[in-house]
Image (cartoon, rainbow, N blue to C red):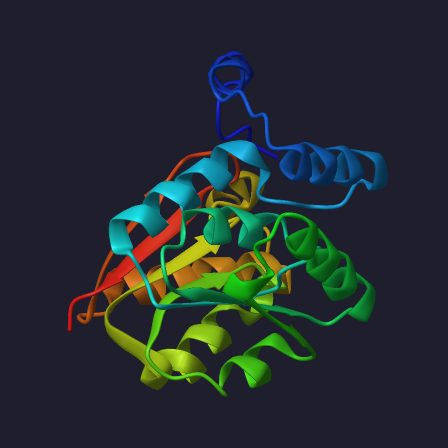
Length: 208
């Protein structure tokens, strides 16, 4: 496993990224307590900035967990909405409760089930956020291309997969991430980059 961000740099960035929102802090506490994977605060702040720049009407999340990343999207939204999709009812129930407490529930829609299949219900997606099982990333993009709006953004967490993308591992998640990255970097309809932040965040801009 390769450390993507030098630990001293990450510690410095976290020190800069002070946060007072009690709901963010509580979700971070629970994630640490349960060893539950979240995008973490540094990526959350990136999602906030991208949302402000894009000013989307519709964000669809594949793999919302208990709502941490969606909360960052919702905080930044002006008039749009974010659709949270997760396979576990308990996760969605927790997210809904948090959004209600934070008075953000009017900006969100909560769905339970297969993320890719549920996402097919939505057209004109402005931001597609992907954080499901890594071997499903490529399938998600291919099946939802027609649902994306012009000039949409695709944002994917774990696109460097703890550095395994440069190793010799052939497990299906590592292979899946490699294929996904290669697909979007070579696709003529997207301009793609990866930010080596935390575990790597892919951002792809749909050119038309």
